[in-house]
Length: 493
Image 1: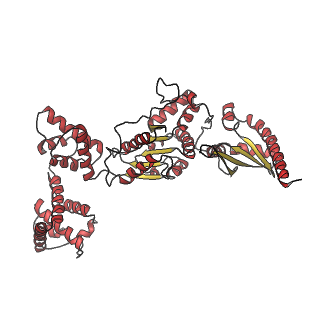
Image 2: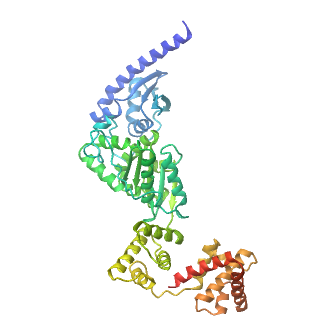
Image 3: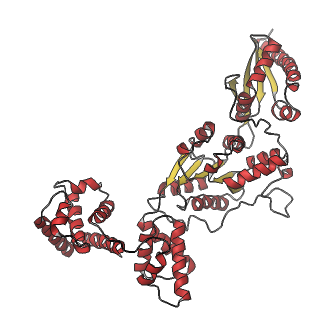
């Protein structure tokens, strides 16, 4: 017999035997699971081959394989041994769409019975039956349209154009721009943006969503808060509509999920999101997440989810520094057509350091007070308004505070300023600090010198004179000193 014909004939016999064995297994499985579970997780399985007491089953996705192994490994193992004997074993063949226009199929072989039973969830009836997308009941359908079209739930005011870039958010913003240009096709999938409340996470991820819609109008984008996601899941569970819930989210091209730390107490929601995450990621869809804490600190989140969060990029956003806060205020003023003296802008930016929301609130309150009282906006008005936002009264400026401002400005460690060294950058920073301390504090020359590791008063006098001389001859040096002087003045108001 021709070798190729023999191999083909052997494959046919192997497949026929596999089908027969699997049919016997199915009869046993039907007696041990409910109808919906069987329809969802066992009916789609096809017998692929049988060789040396190893039954190979064909499943439609990596997630499908993982779910079977996590939830039904014991049932499958006992069933296979009952039909094939003690030597019976199981393998899987995962057949996936290649994602191109021809929908090429790729096959991956996986061992069976290698994963432990999942003990952290009793939720095993998770439907994954594929329906016509236009017949899925969606929580975000646009009324009046027969075909499924999703309302993206995006705020059109959140764009990259009005998202002020600074040292605090440069990496996250750059990654977001990259994702918006090629959603699902970069290594930043998922993109996890984390940082404190009011630091600009929601603005950034919604800006990504708006940019995707502008560049890729055919892609389905959806922004949803974790709280709303949880509530939707609960509602769909009560109505026995989990199938629609999962299928809907698996159809999204760019899913933006805000505040995932709220998933921590919701174990069943984590299970569902795990299924959705796997499908989207394997399908080349983009996932964007935000959290108030780094993923590694999400105690209570399932480890399998945390491991997937680490697949892409975790980008942090820090509280905005002074220059960024000032730029944010100026941008908001331009948007609203408002004007405010530069010294007041700097005063507000210096004193509101917590988050962007309070910064915007302070600006609005300032303009409201000026309008209602028919007064010009000045420092005195700003001081009165700012009492509602920060504690600014009776603040005495210290030498230590000036030292820290100068170290931050020149990017020097604080302890370097106190060590006796002749390195130019340290000497220059120390001289400027002594000059500012003499100008803005009531400390004696001797006391100032002692704050720098024991210098005497003559060193302080020499430092102040050196600063004044350099300001007369070096324009760049003068600008640096004046900028620092302005920061100290704002702190002393």
